[in-house]
Length: 212
Image (tube, rainbow, N blue to C red):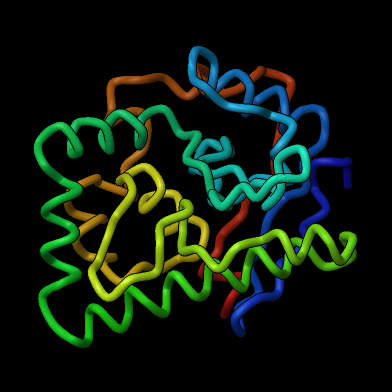
């Protein structure tokens, strides 16, 4: 197995989350996918949720950026899914998702638990870091949202990335339908080669199989 093929597992919140640690080829692929966007590739720890062409769809990011908290653990890199997320946001998707999650005590509780899980994931990524670094990690929800009684959704790109990386979301059905989460670049008008450099070849990463 090459440097890009050794799976690692992030243990947090009772989950074992598979990802491919970042090597040179992975970083080149993420840089190509994120070209033209404000993104620091030095934050990338690895990738997960590969598409059927073997391209990364989500980057796993460090919880610290130059020693400061960086609360976006899962960053959507798939250009096709990102396009659909942007279109849904422009059509009022963030507010619609907030209304859905506010709809019942059950969905509100599920949303709070999901954000607590993101805290636990960030703390797991900090294991082995200096104590000061762990102490600086605030108790914020996914993407740095404040944990309040009211549901607050930061953006749909983040929700899609978390849905793909973890395999679930409190609004999985809504995201799957609105963003066509499981569709690929061909459905989005892109070509597979738009996503990565040709010499990169990742193994299959089937989250449902790995969690079985």
